[in-house]
Amino acid sequence: MPARNDHIAKARHNEQFFSSFDIDTTPFLDWVVNGVFYSATHYLDSYFANKGKHPSDHKTRNDLIWAESNLGRSFFHLYRPLKDDSEEGCYNMRTFTPDEIRRDIMPLLDNIKTHLKRYVPEI
Image 1 (tube, helix red, strand yellow):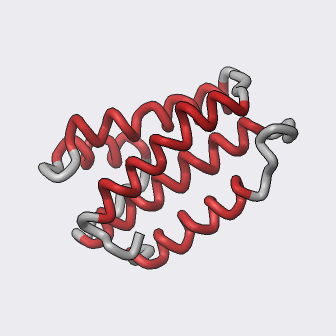
Image 2 (cartoon, one colour):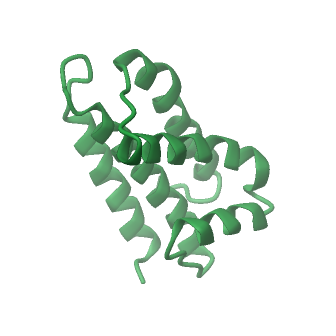
Image 3 (cartoon, rainbow, N blue to C red):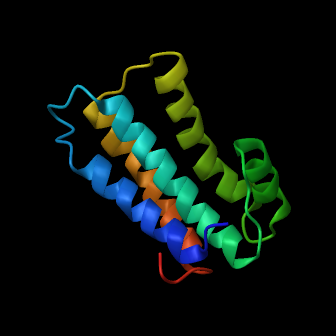
């Protein structure tokens, strides 16, 4: 099982990936959205790894979010839209705009990181 620091390293790796795109010109905005979502997922998994929990799928991760008093509803409302956007881009071929990514998607990742830093300061 990956350790806390492994998840943080992977989250940062994903951030480097999506940050390498100029979102005003890239045709790969769906991959930017996926990178943002999987960064959030690995930051979240670093939190769970601290507790000896290692979700192996999205449903298990969602259930763990709801079960954690430090996360719960308020955190789920940050995380769920990223998951939904990622799935919409992958499976329903939804297109995203640079403004939408700046205004709606990136702030969710920032808020997730801010929330989780209380429990995993290395984030």
